[in-house]
Amino acid sequence: MKNKLKQIAASILTLALLAVPVLAAAESVGSNSLNVADGTVYTYSTQAVTSDSGKQTNLHENIFTYKKEAQVRPVVAFGTTLYGTSPMNKTIKTLEEQGYSMVAGINGSFFERSTGIPYGIVITNSILRSGGSANAVGFLADGSAVIGDPEVTVTLDYGGDTPLLVNYNKAMTTQNGVLLYSQDYDTRTKNTIEGYHVIVRPSGTEPKIKVYYTTLGKDLAEAEAEKEKLAEALKPILA
Image (cartoon, rainbow, N blue to C red):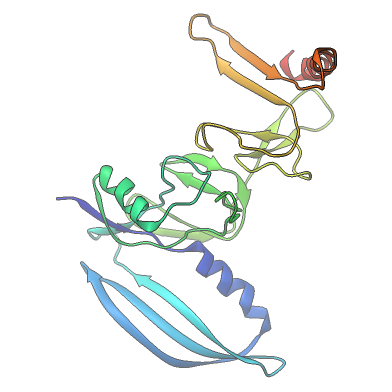
């Protein structure tokens, strides 16, 4: 029999935490519950919230309640690559190929709408897929949930006074400096901002690490000049 699963939204937890300081009062409007499988209950509730300024709005919550070590367990899924967004039917198909039957699913993190890259951290099967720090929820093998504010940093020690902070599997911006990509990101970086690209991989025939880098210029001479500049900058790192 296929394993059944569900995914709980860290974004809901984040939203709730962010909303707490500005809420003055909340009154329950109503709720509906549905037993989806094996004692796993989905509850949709609405609360009328009044802020300190007197403005009233409705807060909607989607809540899944499940039993530890039950047949229905939560997992984190991101498809085959981080880049891009996927409709729910694609996520269902991906999980079915892994032997699961999905009974519920929801976005697990806030993300950049144009790229689909999550703002926070993503870890699946104990492997770091994307770095970052934000309120998050994680799940152990027995279904236990762990909620907190994790922070994972990736640094590059190049012999300087302090290690260089590296953004792992994030889209390039004009502010985030050096980035490190793995195959979890995508087959290409798809960056639209000019920058140097350095590829590091193990040799398939020798016990060594090989480094490739590319440079661009308006002509061959300018590209060659950029190549020499990049080679010089890489020396402390590759020494």
